[in-house]
Image 1 (cartoon, one colour):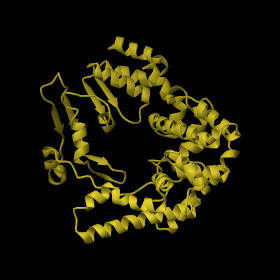
Image 2: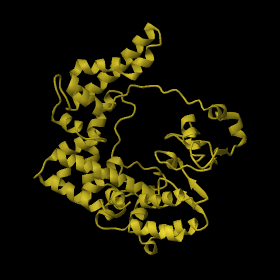
Image 3: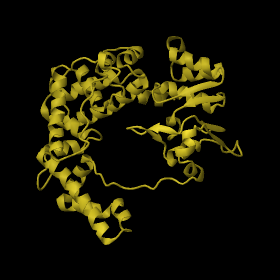
Image 4: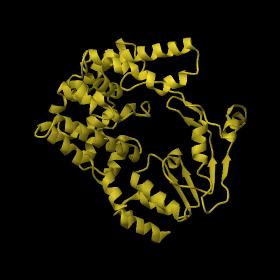
Length: 382
């Protein structure tokens, strides 16, 4: 175990003596035990995964992230709880989620069968969908035909207004509705078109398109993947041009970050400065138009909960500083920083070479895309 651990650390240029997290991983691993969750630093998760696939870890405590997208089979899978947070409340997990995780039990070529154990409370015996879990029947997939602003802009650019409205007729939602009565099909089609027209009208009033084509705002948003409206609003407001590289880094992470424990951290939060307030106001310009049209879930506004942590990191701070100032697991912050790096690169392309803002965005990328945040470096070393 020690030899394998040292080999992994050497490959990824890690120093266990200076990293308490790695020391903890080794200490538990020597006893055949490990843990894996989304809040861990990506490089720490990589170390645990390699120890696990070596067969040296006998017991791994993990969240559902371990079962998604990676080939990590085990002989036995144990569920200590059948409920999970669905974004709003704790509820029983869907069959497809249960089966995805349970499917890790049984290693092809090594085990003739896999064992799945679910620890049940009395309440679970009454309310959990145990028969569905056991039968392997998954919930049906139902299309809601809820096109994003980015998709609408791209379709409008290619198909025009009339072609965009006809998009529903070629959608999966329309295919599913085909089994209903003529009246039901007509009702669903009318509702989908009305929702689409409402979003088009919002974009028109916000200055993203007119009756014929995309306007400059729309052309910029069309080329940004994720948080495209927020980024576009900031670009056209001019607020980004008055920011230094540290403020840019904090701003783009604020567009992505979503505070999970706001009530607990109330005493730690500071009042936003003038540029933060102006940034939020720029996004709220679009949100106000959405609210006038009755949008139930408007755009996400900037969340400055980790601004101090990002500012420290962009100035050369340590991982310990990052975690301490963010009041959350470093892995969660690293994931947000990586997304911010990608967004700043996309926005920089829209600004154009030779512009001061483009150069400053590049400086911000360089400042935060280092050490544990640099995904490309980790990939190349591995």
